[in-house]
Length: 443
Image 1: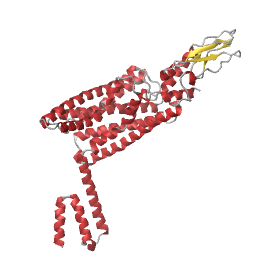
Image 2: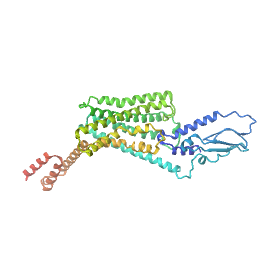
Image 3: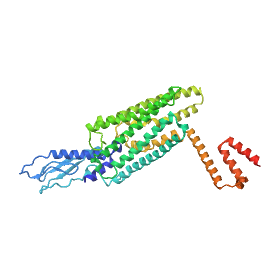
Image 4: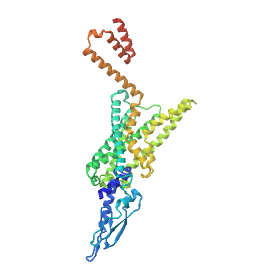
């Protein structure tokens, strides 16, 4: 009964309220059970009736024979359904409690025959799980590819791309942390993870928190670097890179070290995935909110600088061109700074639940993919370099093929001559002229 009713509660709880919300219900039920047992009054030998009873969800006080006891629904039911229902039980002549009437499902708002039953809710939230799993998988694949591109070509070895690469790594860590957390804490569908207090589960949650911190701090580094580029005419490629690296990884490490120590000494319970202690919660939430606020200020300032620069360059030109160029710059900054996080930071977590789910689970998981697309794959310089490399590989394969299978007669044949000339034309104008001259001479 307990497992069944708690699973129904989990299906209707906001997923953004915590790392896994059904554990909050489970912990609340455990606390109420302990309080019920503590209040268990000593019963005299001549007492005739039903003793205090815990049915798995509610605490029933002792009652005399034939007495009907009426109590409200458990608080967590009311928090979910906003229905203030009541339950009743009868103390029979045999000193046994009757079954609750009406049943919990009816009295407390869980009508299993309604249109939005448990299976519908389960399917609804499972869809979000599939979305963010696919999103993080796509992000990891694209980010690793972008890292390889930036690392393989020396042309891209500069401060700007170094910062991009560290940002890519922070997104990769975030995706790995999500997969690790799901594997360690929520692999099976039982509720055993709510009572877990192992080193592995605590490490998984700590790693998850660190990846979130690193992600936000590297977003801040990107904003600071962009602000620096717009304000300063000359910026050394290597002057600030080590300071950026130290701040991007050092600050999250310091915050996480503080959080772990506070957890150990003040709230070393469970898997460190609850947020009942406000001090512990704000050790993580405070720095994240601060980075978002600073990035928001930088975002506004960058827009102001861009507007000023565009006006001075256009000199009263076409308004359409002006707004198109400004829109392109803005679209690059919005996913970079994560301004949308600041919108939800000041609202209760129950506000706009579906919007939160779509943005945080859907769009949030694809954010790494978007960053890799914007700062690597859509970069004209990267595209040009990749095309050159592709042509080089094709030419090398062609030379290897002709070296292994070609003969003198084939090399001097008109078909082979045309093939070589068409291939060399794609690679270089200089090689095209040289090949043409050699061909005329041989003719």
